Length: 492
Image 1 (spheres, rainbow, N blue to C red):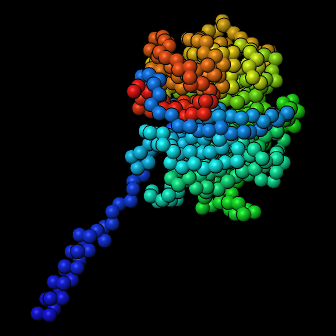
Image 2 (cartoon, rainbow, N blue to C red):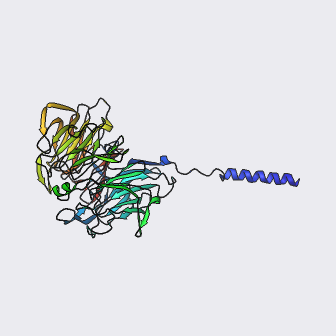
Image 3 (cartoon, rainbow, N blue to C red):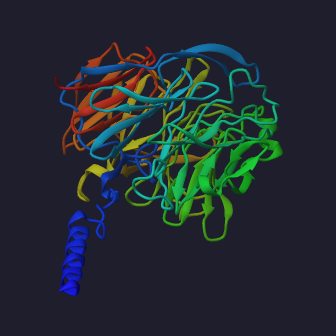
């Protein structure tokens, strides 16, 4: 009788344990609760995605103040200015976490912010030492559980530090921040070199949990983003640097007056990484051999990022600086020798605006991610000359040739599809399936286009001006302005 009582008691205990879930605890949050929608500058590793659905109109849904900050513009003769809002490149990241959408936006008031995309409410702010004029990128740490506070990491650059000297031992202008908490995870020292700058304006490319990043020192670095692998050096937690290579020569430093900065963001094509530099080169890095090769030399400063097209070509934008010819957009075949790799060149007109003389400062946009294989592949770019241009990527007229940036070699010119006077801009336009949107110093423009490549201006918002690159998602547009605000726009 006593044995039966004990058995019955044991059965009841086991049943209670099973029903209570002790042996089967509730599952942890799934990784599909995390979605990196716009995780990097221009959307992906090829720098050619800008979001899904554009808005029907440009009504203001909400705006969030980003403040202002003072900074020293790096140049041969430094100048102190006040900057408001956010800008070049200044594109917001868009991340879904536990069924809620968030933006991550760097700003000119020195702060990196996590913002609720639905309302504009600021979740947290992390202070840098200077204005943030770059776009960050997001990395999902595979070494952390899905519900870990540091599962999602934001990698973000800034200027060197308003009160910092160019020759200081430490300039932490690149940092890793926890997306969920806003806590600093590590910071990277941008070491002084031959350049006049120690800023980080570019966005990293993350491949196989490895960071590839160009610095304004003129160096290209490869870093380990994992905070657990970071080392304490002089009381600072710093990431492991796998390698660093200068992408310039002594002759480049002299010819460009120390302007050998890398402001662009690297792009991935198969096993190659492409990066542009202020020294005037498009470089190709072989991930198998670890070697760099000069794909093409323009001679001019290249601020814009390389863009990968659907047929595996590389599209670059060229400023008018250090060259006798014009700046513009150039399409390159990376499988060919540097002497014969240019497919076409589209020059823009010279124009003195602020400190620029012409060409294109921002990157080119393409519609390849939004079209079928039978549709026209288009490029859009806006120049210092004040015009927005749209050209056909895959059609050239062999009888229509133009001089290249150095005014020596003749190159084919692509077919021009559309041209519109928007005013000068250093922003990058964005495409969707049937929209083209660009922010300029004279306003925000939204155009429609159809399968016949007919472009029509739908709306212009003159109140929103600046140099940041927008993103779109589910009928909403997010963009920072130089008036000090981040805007959410769409149909009310």
